[in-house]
Length: 116
Image 1 (cartoon, rainbow, N blue to C red):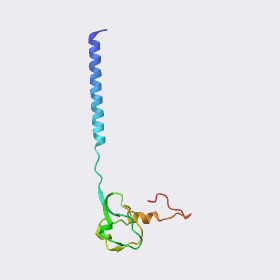
Image 2: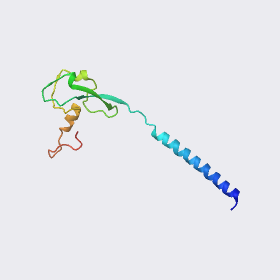
Image 3: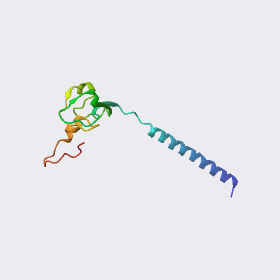
Image 4: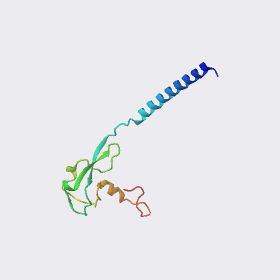
């Protein structure tokens, strides 16, 4: 075989490999840059509370929650919930609004699909 033909072939192959690896590197670099999600706060119970107990700030805590997915009826400050009587029995680490939604039933009397 001709020695110059082999060298030209290897040079072209290395150039194509370099260009392809640069393209793949830049694509992965662009894809892996994750934009931070905007988060808000949601008030949840620290532990299960029986029905009718007085809610104070020791029984509540804030968790991070995506700002673009609000729960209907959610509270964002502990001060808004403290000092009230508990009208529903929330489980630990679940919001009160989530428990209200899970109590819904469909037309046949069963629990609604997708409930918490």
